[in-house]
Length: 144
Image: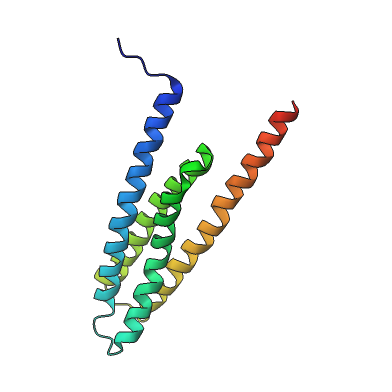
């Protein structure tokens, strides 16, 4: 009979979480780009729309890159990265969708500036914080 050990089941779950994070991040990047272009369709400056598109895509590029290079990271750090990827992507799509497809707003561009900034701040805070906490916990466990 086939038996799954806790390490194998944890590894399988982490693999599924990683795959889901990558797929959702790539789909989120495409969706966010589409919503950005839709929201900026009446703007006469193509350069400005292109700059917004690059800015909106930047957190997704960073998250996908981190997901690709995270193979040697600690399990909890990777799980945090994958969870942050899922939450940020779904949150960004919800906000961009409401702004681009919802009722007209006086300054819709501000959402396309603030959401990527908030995403960058969250990425820059959460991942290093978890890594730092893991380092401290492992040093304490080593002393005990």
